[in-house]
Length: 318
Image (cartoon, rainbow, N blue to C red; front, top):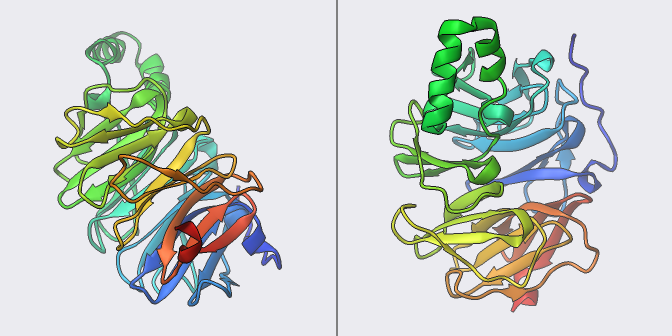
């Protein structure tokens, strides 16, 4: 099945958007449903890029101001070499019926893309080719033993289970040379070899986690379902739950250069902390629309939501 190019839509900046990145303080790139990719140099005016696929896009990552990648449904991987002005389809596998959720590049050649049911691809040539990988080391010992037995006794079932037994891999976070990954059913793992092998962290929550990041004072922060958020001050060995008066799912966490920490989520949830996650002020949006991610652009908080891009002056958050 050949992909259809994304429509250039007048109202693209008011449609569902899922991820946003700041490229060297010079440009912003946002991605979202139906293959929409939007560029802006001022956070106010947005230009839609031509994109060769209509798949919903879930994640975008730039290694420098020219080279970036976006991933989404149908195991789609797009690449740009001109700062997002044009995009090429590097990988497209609708037959997998699985979305990719996030992408990360360590340098211009080495990258990984991750998604539903442990979907995992790697490139060492800038995305010219992508190889599928399977990472059973993140499973419990019982599940690993079950797979090994299947491999010997029922190869066909082994193939089926490879595509179903792993949790969803929801988000990647690069912390220096350490790569963290969080996902479904409390899954959290880290890698010290750019994702070649993974060490599963001790479970600290049994619900899905949707983001992991560093706070301004370098604690690890993980957020997920029903307002659950957790801090670790020992590189993920132990976690403490943050008490929040919020039950909406948290989609993302990020901070700014002023030491502020932001949590965003469903039902318009926007929580701000000035004390590294000890306490939060609730400044949620009255419209109740889901916020998927965001960033601080100059003096404005830019949010990507289910109804497009919203901006809030930082002065209004005090």
